[in-house]
Length: 119
Image (cartoon, rainbow, N blue to C red; front, top):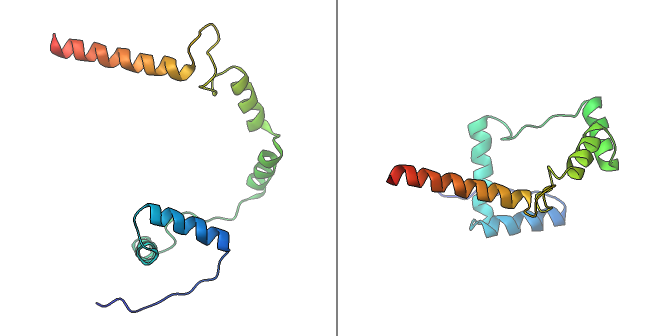
C-alpha cells in the first residue's frame, strides 16, 4: 500500500528539535518514527505508555522533590553521606571507590569461575 497519508502537529520547538535529534541519532527518519508510534498505538489499542493524573500524595511528593525536602530526600542525603550511593567516593576504610571494589569482586568471581572450568 503506498504511503500517502500525512499528519500535522503543533508543539514546542525545543521538544521537536530534541526528539528529532534523538530519532536521527537512532538512524530513523521522522516519518518512520511517526509510523512506529502509530503502530504501537494500534498494538496497545491506546497510547503505548501509562498516562495518569497524579493524586494529591504524588503531587505533594513531586513538590517536595523539587524543593529538596521530604522523606525520600532525607534518605538520599543520609545514603550519600555514608557513601553507599556515591560510587566515585572512596569507601570508608578503603582507598578504592565502591565502583572499583565492585569491579574487583566481579573480576575475582570470573577468574575463579574460569579456574574451576579449566581445572
